[in-house]
Amino acid sequence: MKIPFAPPMIDEAVIKEVTDTLESGWITSGPKVRQLESMFNDFVQLPASVCVNSWTSGAQLVLKWWGVGPGDEVIVPAYTYAATALVVLHAGATPVMVDINEDFAMDPSSLRKALTPRTKAIIPVDFAGWPCDYASIRNILLEPATQALFTPTNQLQRTLGRPLLMTDAAHSLGALYEDRPAGLQADIVVYSLHAVKNITTAEGGVIGLNLPEPFSNQEVYRWMKINSLNGQTRDSFERAQGKSWRYDIVSDGLKINMPDVCAAIGVAQLRGYDNMLLPRRRRVAERYYEGLKKYSWAQLPPLQSSVAQSAYHIFPLCIKGITEVQRDEIIDRIETRGVSVNVHFIPLPMLSLFREKGYSIEDYPVSYAKFSTEITLPIYPQLSDVEVYHVLFAVIEAYSAVTGNEAWG
Image (cartoon, rainbow, N blue to C red; front, side, top):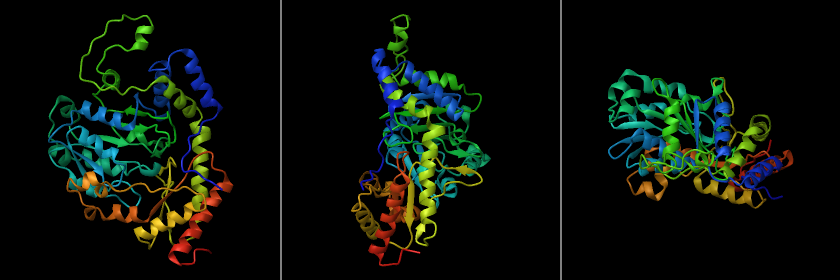
């Protein structure tokens, strides 16, 4: 039995939506992008959403708007995908890494210690679909000491009076925190719509705006739209609707707009997400949980609590009492049974780019402990119960074979 890791869900609804777009004659940014933005507003209860061509470009645009540059610092977890820190480097600023907790989320106590007058933003990561400890993070940002430490360098920063909270929600569309969409906990939330994510547009991302008063989210939306298209004041779709051809370039914007042919995939998937795709992902996660909870060696990820609910993006299983080498051997053995698994992620300080900049994994013990024992099990709507049980069998058998410990019972 062959079980791939993360195939996209391309059903008839997606094919029809994309076909309609192709047949319309309008494939770049246009009505489907506007429709997807409106659907995100409704689904996440956001004041405004901006479609872009990736999570990375969306986060870059946010940091550009916020005025992050050389001499500034942005706090990120050491345990995340490289893009979370790369956007900080692209802005000319310094990523300040902090360790995580056992649930893979940014450790608030480490966050507090990392704050300096140069801190301009915080980027917590909702890993695997599980929301961060937003109550603690927001309390820290609102503390008088944090606000007194904050040193703004432009009017936007002076208006907010504290570091910007921008969530990396690449994994967490559909997650809940305090019975509301988790994205509402941040000033700005950035979602990924990459091919392996819960909702895809093949490649893409969405910037969700939730800035407090006196900010106007609609004004920021207009700035983001202009600056996602080279700083141009009027796009092709507006001109096609009969508006004047004349445009201006008002800023040094980026070229990161999402085309309609991609947005069409997201429109079809988001339409069925809450009632079909997300419940199917939850079913897979719960099957894994039930199948593994009786084993003392299996450290399972949180799925639900009195405060939070996961979006079930992936299932990060940690195995107690093994080394990194044994973890890799277990993965190799699992894959001999046709099951594709992964590791999320290699901590940033272990990657050559960051290691050569002076970051050391020894400073992030929890991040290394999680990484060295983590195996990511696949979650996607198409997985049948038979396939889920095959994954479980492969994991349990591989653990026993590699460690020599009895896995059954």
